[in-house]
Length: 160
Image (cartoon, rainbow, N blue to C red; front, side, top):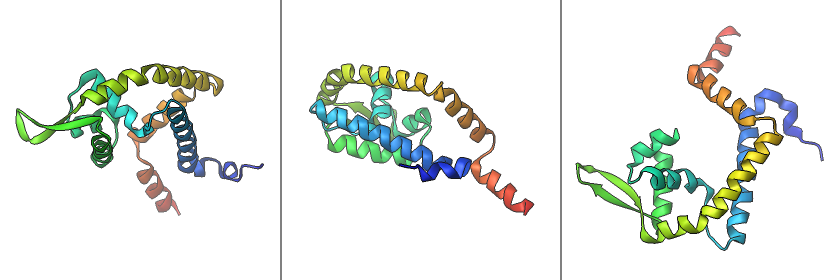
């Protein structure tokens, strides 16, 4: 079957990245299901950070992960509903909440470690097969940090 999106080249970069992300996330969801765990791939970054350096606030997590506060808040809410994390008032600032693993969340993390190790090894294999796509993504991140796509589009519009 012909991939019609590829014909758009660089113009389809956002769509291609979303499609790849959806495919990878769906495969992870299927593996979690085979493992007997109801788990959302979007939780991984937050959980990794909480395991390594928790408890952390939503703002700290957003900064560490390079995503929006809103995105972390939505992830926090779903993790809380699942009973994996809890939010407690920060003793140094009552306006802030510190997120931390619950007892059942810590148990789930221990259960998932072998699966996460397999996912990591598969990601390394995929990256190698794709000839170090992570380096290309790093370069893309750096290029966007230097100048946003918004600014690039505005400059293109000024030239016409």
